[in-house]
Amino acid sequence: MRCLLCTAALAAALLGPVQRAHAQAEDQAAARALFEEGRRLLREENYEAGCPKFEAARKLYPSAGTLLNLGDCYEHAGRTASAWTTFGEAVTVAGRTNRPDAIVQARAQQAALTPRLVRLAIRVARSVPGLVVRRDGLDVPQGAWGEAIPVDPGTHELRAEAAGYELWSQSIVVAGAGHTATVDIPELHLIGAPAVAKAAVVAAGSPLNTSVRPDPAPLFGAMTTAPNERTSVGRTQRIAGLTAAGAGAIALIAAGILSLVAKSEQDAATTEHGSSRVNDSAAAVHLANAATILVVAGGTVMAAGAILWLTSPNTPAQVGTNGHELILRGSF
Image 1 (cartoon, rainbow, N blue to C red):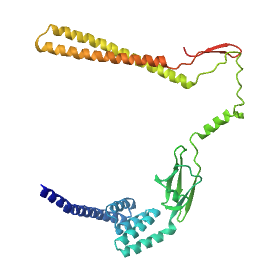
Image 2 (image 1 turned 120 degrees about the vertical axis):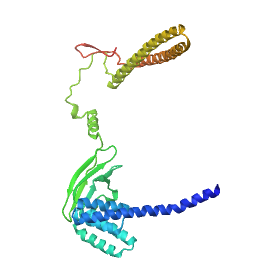
Image 3 (image 1 turned 90 degrees about the vertical axis):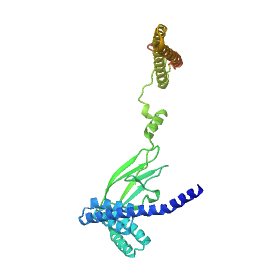
Image 4 (image 1 turned 30 degrees about the vertical axis):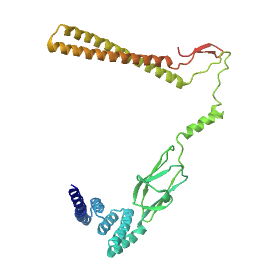
């Protein structure tokens, strides 16, 4: 057995590199087919369809030739920043694969694109804890804030957000060879800050509430109003109590019906013989058990409903006067 296990392990160790080499060869073949299709579309000036072919080939096998053609496709499509970045990637891959000719070509095309680049600088007026800045759905690192970063010409979506703060967003169109656009992200506002500030001013007795005429002082029995929250909770709890009591009553009624049916089955069994008597007796037992369970459950639910009703908070009765009439208020 040990010999068999050793043989299997050795076979797996030998087959692993072979399988990986086979998969790599398949990826290279697929990348080559995509590359050729991309070249055909590039010759036809169909850049919208050709660029995705080179992108797919790069994922399978990122060769210097694929990257050079992808950068060329981006450049013809007007995506200058994408082309400039791809030519830089081609320089790295060509150096790793010992392709000095590709290095020269990629550097030359990248240098030619540099004066035509469109740049976007995102400046943050004041950072807040947890601030995240995104451009076209991708995070902009804090180290890049305020820097003129190459972007493709066109419309870009900017967002700034942080927990507890209002979201800021803006669309900007960037165009013009060599142009640099600047966007200033304003300081984010706390969610609900204006309402809180207003409440604080009113509480402090500012002129905002001087137009409100106070009620005449009560002559006796100064009357206060219970909080709305207490009234709402009491009403909700009483409704829940009534609902639970109703459900319990329905369960008890069902239990009574099952008990009657069980008795009927048992009475029928006493007059029968053989399998019919056995079946009816068993059915009577099952129905009786179900009725018992419903009685216990219904009684428990009704008790819970009664507790909810009795313990619900009420607004106490209040008596007072406003100088003209006697007022009685509260829940009963």
